[in-house]
Structure formats: structure tokens, C-alpha cells
Image 1 (tube, helix red, strand yellow):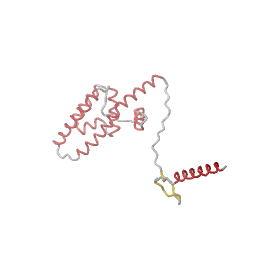
Image 2 (spheres, one colour):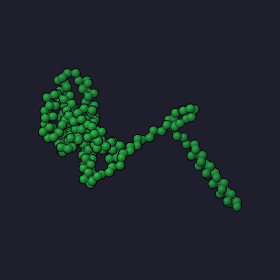
Image 3 (cartoon, helix red, strand yellow):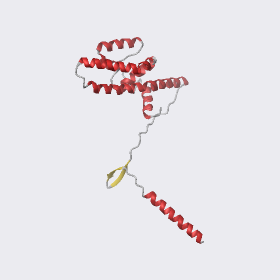
Image 4 (cartoon, helix red, strand yellow):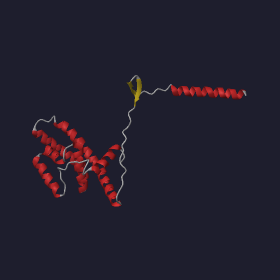
Length: 195
């Protein structure tokens, strides 16, 4: 009986000490006071809810999977284009003469050709169309407007004519709620980290 009493006493002390160490831990969070009550404010990561995809046919599902593969391939280039454009715009604000601007444009063009030219030449025509749309999505300007701003109206006309020969249109606007709905769905999944 005495052993049982000692064991229960030790167990009580251990549990009491355990409970004390748990309750003495402090967690600091932001809070708000509403009608005299303190309410903790906790920021949660965004949660995305998408409709369940159903396919009318196996062919339609394969078509979507091909589109997804193409968007995943070209999306990083569109993001890069948006980033570089913002970067170059801040630098161009400091350039004062037209001659310096032309020199800067040529320098940029050479850098981009050396770094990404080989990869971009490997894109298929449909990947190129998707890239044109995604650049519009990232920058807010069509590819034609970007070329016109950076290289001039004549060069933009030349590239638009060249693109039209191969079935592209540099003036294509990105329509996330219409024709480009599937692309927008895939991009949202990429941005959320699901792809």
C-alpha cells in the first residue's frame, strides 16, 4: 500500500509539472478588441476551390492535358517577360536621349537573344500563341503594343505581318472569362502551387 501511495504521489507531481510547463507556454498573435472582447487575428493561407472537371470524351480530356502541358512550358517565359519589362521600364525612366534609348534597346535585345533565344525558337506555333496571350496577361499590353513601344511602329508592323503569315496575331488580347478560360484555369493552378 505504501508503494502505491508513493507511486501515485510521484505520478501526481510529474503530471502537475507537465501541466504547468504546457500552460506556461505563450503564443503571441495579433488581436482586435470588439465590444470589450479580445479576438485573436490569425492569417490563413488562401484556399482555392475549383469546379470538378468532367469530360465529355477522352479526346476532350487529352486536348486539355496537351493545353496544360503547353501552358506549363511557356508560363515561366511570360512571367519573366513581365518582370523584365518592369525592370527595364524603371531604367528607361532615367534615360534622357533617344540615342541612349536605342542603344539600351539593342543591348537588351542582345542579352535576351543570348539567354533565351534558343529556347524560344524551340516553341511550337501553338505554344507561341499561348505565350503571346500570357504576355498580355502579365504586362497588360499586347505583344504588338510592347514591340511598338520598344522598337517603333514600323518594326511592330513588320513583326505583326510576319506573325500573321504563320497564323499568329500580336494584337491578340487575353480574355480570361471567354476564349482563354482554360488557360486562366491552368495559370491559377500553377500560381496556387497545384501544378
